[in-house]
Structures are given as C-alpha cells and as structure tokens.
Length: 114
Length: 114
Image (cartoon, rainbow over all chains, first blue to last red; front, side, top):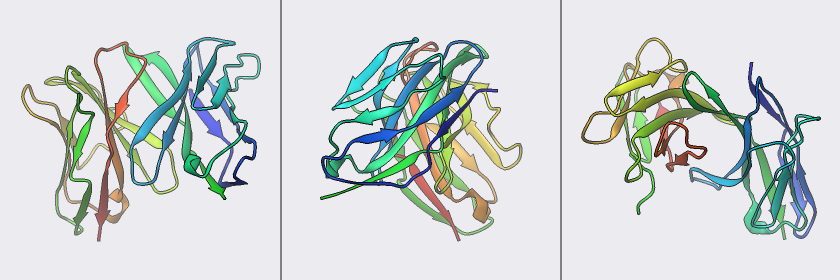
C-alpha cells in the first residue's frame, strides 16, 4: 500500500543551525509529494510541493527534492529561526478511487532555541 | 476570501454524548475532506464528500460516526455516544475540484471526551 515514513522527533536545534527532516515513501504509481507545517494550535499549511521526479520544491528558505531512485523527499533549511518551531508533515498525493487522496507521515516536531 | 472555517475550535463532551463538528469550505470549493489527528500522530483520512454525496468513507469507523455535506450549509461530522478514544483533533480540508493538487485546511476542532 501507499505510506509515508518520517524521522521521529522531536528535533531540537539552535537558531541558525542546518535542518534536515527525512521522509521516505512507498507508493504504487507516481505520487506528488508535499511538506505541510502545523504551528501550535493551528491547522496545516502547505509549505512546498513537487509533482514529479527531480523536481525541487522551495518556500521560505525550505527545500525538498523529489528523489524517485531513493523514494525520498527530505526537507532542508540552511539556517533555522525560532519562528520555524512547528510540526512538519510529509505527505503524498495519489489519484486513487477517482480522486486525489492525501496520505500523511506521523509528523516531526521541530523546536528551535535562541 | 475567507479560508476554511471550523467550529467549534474546542469541544468537551462527556462519554455517551453526541459531538457535532462543522466545516465551512472556502468559497467556490465543493469538495470536503475530514481527517483525524490522534495525539502525537499524523492525520488519518476519514471521509471525502462532495455536495450531497459521500464519495469515500473508507476511513470512517463503521459505528457512531457519520458525515454529511448538504446542498446549503456547512459539512457536519457527527459522533454519537462518544468514548474517550474519540478525543482527538479533527481537521477538514476543501478543494475546488476533484483532481486538485492542493487541499486547504481549517484550524481544526479539538474534541475532549471526559
């Protein structure tokens, strides 16, 4: 079946540190891949996406590259800020049963300290 | 253009009571998805609805849970005879068409069963 596996958190970093959050997926076919961010007490916001192999999604300094050969979509940021503290969800989108279905990973909590 | 609205934001129910969660999609969106997030877990798909139709309810528990999206008014997720295990955050998302890449999420309803 289709699934998403993320590295477990929490991830604790100091401000300006480099961030990597690993995400791998299992899917039949060719999914689109997404990173969503959830700030405390809020819903999910789309952070970035990639719709085909070798695409790079980027937004607000975050990047992720769709690697078909390793079935991965790792999230990176060169210099994190305290305001990046949130839960990050990797997700895949598959066209299944006549519509697009989102499947989420378990989420990785990031805490950035000054 | 207002985003996806959910109410109430917080709901406390005693065991055995009913919970009604409401979701108003973005203007012009006729597709609604409900997800449940258990503590420290990712979002799990529950049900996908279009106006007046349930398209996919494969993620809904077979008993006590029901959902509707009437021609007029918000989508409703109804949980009868709630139990402690129903305590979770319930998110809805909307999209404008069946093959949309992006789903827009509401802020969620946090249900606590005492």
